[in-house]
Length: 453
Ligand SMILES: Cc1cc2nc3c(=O)[nH]c(=O)nc-3n(C[C@H](O)[C@H](O)[C@H](O)COP(=O)(O)O)c2cc1C
Image (tube, rainbow, N blue to C red):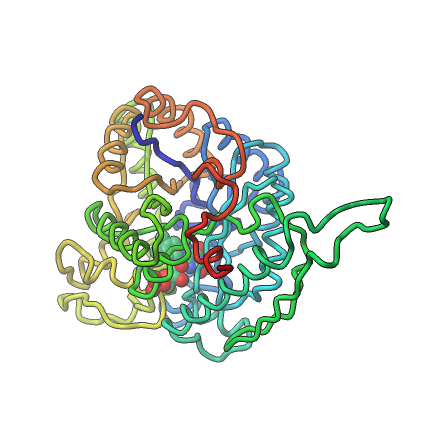
């Protein structure tokens, strides 16, 4: 059978995610409605109608304050702020759907593993196993300041913390409660068998957790594990832990390079390449005809905010585009403690070197990467080509006018992809991991299982 596209809506429980300035577009509803459950419920129903596999919630824990040295530009355009906690929308979205899954971003740099494990067990129970965790190490200096630190923990150390965070998480989610610990036996007067619940007694460099876990085993135990970030350390981390990777890159070939590299590294940990699915961004502007799609794109460009885009770029890379004075100088890679994959994107990963002037111009219109604009057939053709060339398993679909762009995609593009056999017509049964991999729990080759010996 043809490999089918796994589709996720890329979202954030914020007034704006990546559509900088588009809040001004008269048809955009999200900045007014993201605070209401009705909005998220409507979105969940729409995505399930379009057979989306999941909604992928990005999240950050501070404001973007690198560009121009403060958060003013980010606030003016609502760059991922105001922002609510994504976890709270999920039970309501799960209540009106049966198959849509939910990937939530949680940072290992600022969360506590005990609290995080409880949160994911709860979500996994309430969604009947439809939850995933996008593991990030964070990049915003302001997030560090919000959690009692003067400065961010350095990039590579954040990944070392993440390693230990995962070790504790596995102990809590996989080992603390045996599968049959909850006996619920009135005759013996025993709800939980004390012999089958174990303290984890973790004492490490960064975390100390006695346990036991307080939630009983959920359908998936450990949520499906996503990772995003392709620095050297990021790829090594993904190779060990991730079941899904979210990879950005300036060309399909570069994306493919990162995916292949992560899979090769996974093999060194005795994991099979098939155990890792890869996703990248998909930016689409579609309408009934090419002309209408072009007109829609022109409209989007009119509202786009270059300052908003630069604010986001500054926060995630550490490169302040307000501080470059010489427009003719080459925009080169320099080490920062922020996100190294994002920093590489327009510098050492780019197909050609850019001058500062070219970079500034890039931010004056939407999408760093190729945006697909066209009629439904044209869009489907390009998606198919991109799918094959990049070697991804699926996409995180962005949107500019929300929820209208998603409605258009469901109505206009999904039926064509389905006709071509590139996209499912029906969901498969079961938890998110069963839909992706055919089994409810982490595979036996995963390090979470291996350490049990
Ligand atoms: C495609 C992509 C999506 C990301 N989404 C988030 C996010 O929602 N929240 C966050 O704090 N970091 C996010 N990150 C940051 C990374 O997870 C990572 O912590 C950061 O980029 C530093 O790692 P790196 O140097 O390996 O890129 C994302 C990174 C990439 C490449």
